[in-house]
Length: 134
View (tube, rainbow, N blue to C red):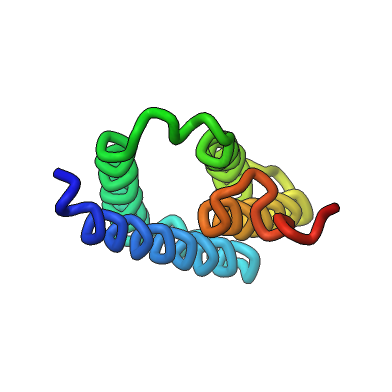
């Protein structure tokens, strides 16, 4: 299966970008008062399809790569951030009670997403901050 690593990684990265973009657009729609459109079935189904493909590709990559991948902490950090991101996104899109809380959770989810991208890109728990710290 290692011979398919580049293709699987490409699918994973494409799904990460698609998932983040779709969340940003749905969150923006919610912030602008179009929460009905943001929660519409076609968008939710698209989100489910993208996230299922993303998870499948991630599990395939983990099965290909060596077990020592968890040794340096970047993947563990990324997985913890993923859980934080999902909770924040859920609160931003439908669970928060006030518009101000939805905005705060939306911004926090976007910051977490960008930080997660940095951790994945740098292969280091500090993400984008790696190399800037002494």
